[in-house]
Length: 211
Image 1 (tube, rainbow, N blue to C red):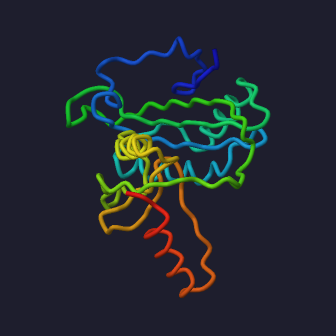
Image 2: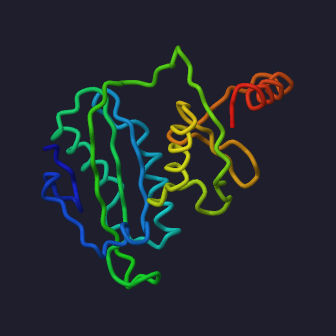
Image 3: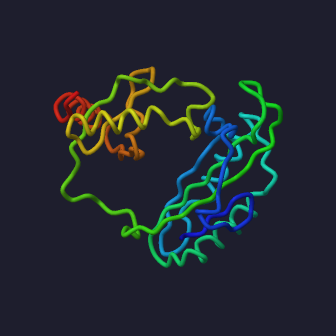
């Protein structure tokens, strides 16, 4: 079985256990980051860790390891799992058990997992994707909006909605009725002319997608 790292200790997956009092399980009290591995190296890790540590301050999570410690652990895990090319990392930080809605303490545990992938780079999908629009649940705009909390129910519901509609994915919206992302991907566009982009976006939303 592939090794994982829990609180800076290497474990086999079958060795890892959590209590039913775990706050990630009971309250979604934690954060996560998903990191792509390219050529056996974590991609854009500094940005992911910066966001993780910034969010931990907002949630009053006390992480007892440094960013350098995370980087060292991640490099070790990639080597242990013999990922030479493509793969994915999942970093989780969650408050240790104790208390109900009000935690008894703010100490945090960390868990790092990895898996291999056939995709070793970002590549253009030449066939394209058939997308839908998901507006059943809108993402609120607040201090947590740009962070990845363990409670990712909106993405789960969006994925289920896409499957029900027979789509590859759906686009999610915020409370300002603006497209923010899909269930599992970021969205980028290149701005080259305001008038053209405005019409492209209008056509993109009005005609190419089914709600």
